[in-house]
Structures are given as structure tokens and as C-alpha cells.
Length: 409
Image (cartoon, rainbow, N blue to C red; front, side, top):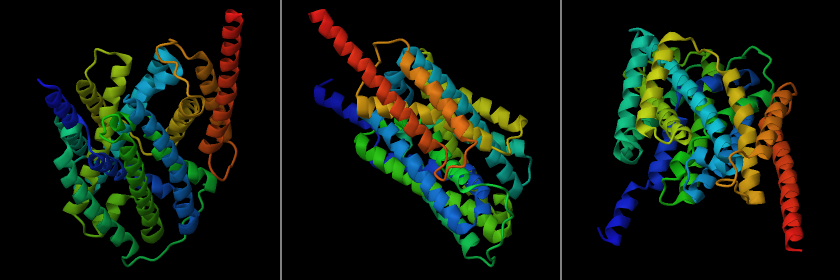
């Protein structure tokens, strides 16, 4: 095979900016985003919108930073983590990521099956199996071959989401006063940060495959966050304008029928596929001999079984746990890659200093949960973690310089 032919084969395997945008459109159109939006309704429409926008701005900037690291280095999300935390430190976060992705897979299938059963009552477990099987089909098709399938699915979802938006905001209902449930503005911001934050350990799995990594990262982040904001607003608006927290009930009352079922099933499939696929990628970071596709299939099967067996109605604590784990992690990566420009990969088995800083960041996040901060917990926690990381990094670099100078003398 000639060099030109080899280059052509390699190019075919790369993903376009458009396909990356479609992938992240599918990630944003999800029942989980709508349900999280319902939690914010008690703030009222104006404050709720503000909290959603601020939260997604913070989360989106973090997503972009994470995606750029993977795009520039050509490494998967969990391989980029090894650059700051060492080989075994990276495996630790890979394990945490696999666990959160198994959790997300189960939660998404659970939410989708309940909503689908609310429209066509055949038993939620049956819908869970249907959704699980469709996710397996998506996995078997593969990330580089999803172009046409994703285009059709995304076009259908976009149209159906617009219909849902119209039914909620331009129907016969009027704004209702939602009972105060004690949710503060800062807590609402944090719930809005949580969704883009949950994608941090995944985005590089896709930007690493892009023909134009920087462009694909920018488009992916913008598309995802715009769609996620839209979904949050649908959930919040559903409560304010219809008094309903159950999205399936709203769809039934609107007479959407089959259209509603399609929204629920395909939005669940296109989002959960990313969770399962990235769980496979992260598994490879732990055990090199594992094949991504088969690991993703196992995760999907586990998630489907869990969705059939366990109730998962309130995910707020799960979202906060994700924030406390991955916010300080990405803060350290940002400080390491963009400020200190260091890379511990191939040098250390454990990035001891950064692991200690991460523990501090984790504890700080949990402590900040008890403080009502207008911008939520994530941003202050990240700023504190970045400052600590930069100070420690400069001290370590200074010592190395002094040591080398002494050796030369």
C-alpha cells in the first residue's frame, strides 16, 4: 500500500466536525436533562433561566478545555488524565469514570423506560430491554460509521423537540406558582453545571478522532450546551406552565402519541450510547487487553439489568458526587496542561502531588456544598484547586532547577 493510500485510509477513520456536532446534539437531547430542569422550576422562570445559563457557561468552558487536551494530544479522555496523575493515577480515575458511566447508563435507561411506559403501558422493564437493544445496535454500528444514522435520528429528534417546546410554552396553559422547595440559586447553578461536567471524562474520546480537533471541540461544546439548555428549559417550563413534573404525562395530554415515544426512545439511545461507548474506552485505560466495543456491550447489559431492578428516581446526589470527583480533576489537568505545561506521563507511575491536590479539591467541594454560593460549588472549587496546583507545580519545578544547577556545579 502506498503512502497516499495509507493516508486516505487514516482520513476515512477520522470524524468530521459535523459528525461530532451531531453526536453531541444527541447527548444534549435527553430525558435526564429535562428531568433535571424540572428541579429548577421553584426558582421561577427568570431566575431559573439565569441559573441554567450561568451553570452551562461554567460547565461548557470546562468541557472545551478537556476536549482541547484530547484533541491536541490525540489521546482518549482517561489517557489525558494520566498526563497529570501518572499511569496508576490515571487508572484510578478510569475506574471512577467507568463506575459513573455504568450509573449513567442505568439511570438513562431507567428514565427512558419509565417515560415510554407512561405513554404505552406495557411494563417499564420491556421498554428498558428495547432501549438496551437499540443501544447495542448503535455500539455495533460504531462511532465512525454513525454518520447517516445519526443525521436521520438527530433531524427527527430536533423536530420532535420543537413540537414539545411549542406544546409547553404555546399551549393553553398559563404560568403557575411553583411551591418553594428550598432550592437556592447557587444550588440551581450547580445542577446546571452538573450535566456538562459529567461529560468531562468523555469528550476527548471523540475529539481525539476528529479531522480538525479544535474546530470539532468548539462545535461539540457549543452544540451540546445549547441543546442541553433547551432541554432544561423544557423541563422547567413543563412544571411552570403545565404543573406536571412527569414529561410523559405532558406528552400524553398534548396528544403526541407515537411522536412522544420516538422522542423518549431515541433521545435515550443517542445519549446513553455515548456513556456506554466511553465506558469501553475508559476500560481499555485500565486493562489494555479489553476491546472497547465488547466492554461497551457489557456496560449496556449491566445498565439494562440495573434499570429493570433498581429504582433511580432522584439523581441529585449522584450529580453532586460527579461534581466533587471530576471538577478538581479537570482543574488539575487545566493547570498542568495550559499553565504549567507539564506532563508526568511516562515519568511517574503515580502523580503523588496531584493526587493529594485532588483529594483536597474533593474535600473542598464537599465542604462548599454546605455554603450557598451564587455561582455554585464547582467554579470556586476549581479556582482553589488550580491555585494550589500552580503553586505546588512551581515549587516542584523550582526544586528541580536548583537540583540540576547543583549537579552541574
